[in-house]
Amino acid sequence: MPVPSSAVADAYARLTEAFPGLAVTELGPADPAPEGGGWVSAAALAQGGDDLDAFLAWDDAQVLRDYGQQARPDVIASFGLHRYAWPACLLITVPWFLHRRVPRFPVTHVSFDRTAAGLSVGRMAVRPTAFACLPGDPAAALPGARVVAGEEALRAEVRAAVAEHLEPVLGGFGPRMRRRGRALWGMATDEVVEGLWYVAHLLGEQERARHELELLLPGATKPYVGSAAFRELTGPDGESLPTRDRASCCMFYTVRPEDTCATCPRTCDADRIARLTAAAAA
Image 1 (cartoon, helix red, strand yellow):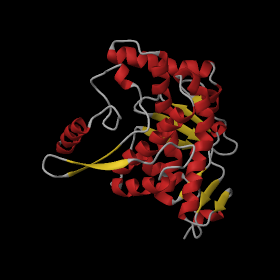
Image 2 (cartoon, one colour):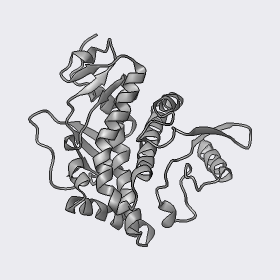
Image 3 (cartoon, helix red, strand yellow):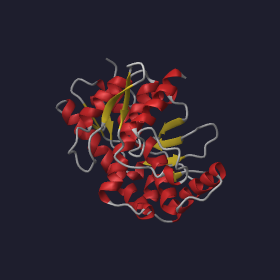
């Protein structure tokens, strides 16, 4: 097999093809990180200073514009973390899911712009360096490759890579969110699971993603909180309706009490069944 030019390029191309709302650009060793406009580095968000203030001002304005009311500062910070962490986790989980390659991205290697025209989530610029892969992967010949023994070792690499990237980011957002420790890692757990589960649905591989995520997060894999937490509900005609129970709450109920997420701990099974049945019919 030919050696790929990048360990992650094909995965990111397929991600954007399936989900055009997110674009990922790889930076070469000599390429400067993008600046200006709506760009912010993950390292700047982790510092928790003026750049984080500007980042959260976007969420504050969006909530006021869309819902006609001001949200609490801790709620705005929770929204902001979700809007960064959801795509950031995909940078690691999608190459693993599609090609069994796990890139490492310290916060200094990722920048995010969610203001780009035509993109619902935004665009990310990444500087790939080290990555883990399995024996026999042609990418093992690339610089920065590290071959691990098997699937469980690679799953450990996914957990470690996400934690390496998100831990400093959680440190920046945490004081604004008035959350610490377990509560923050509960949110991180949900971003890992729900991001990949959503993208896998677009790829027609949602059931495989569910199986892979259950193996990735079986529970007791600190610092993550709980398991992937999938379960089945039964629809009005006896059909199976997959759902999961979030480890955290995004706090959207504080803005719209009547409109919770389908996987929110506050959403009862009857409401979940009604929503999932309506979505399947649509």
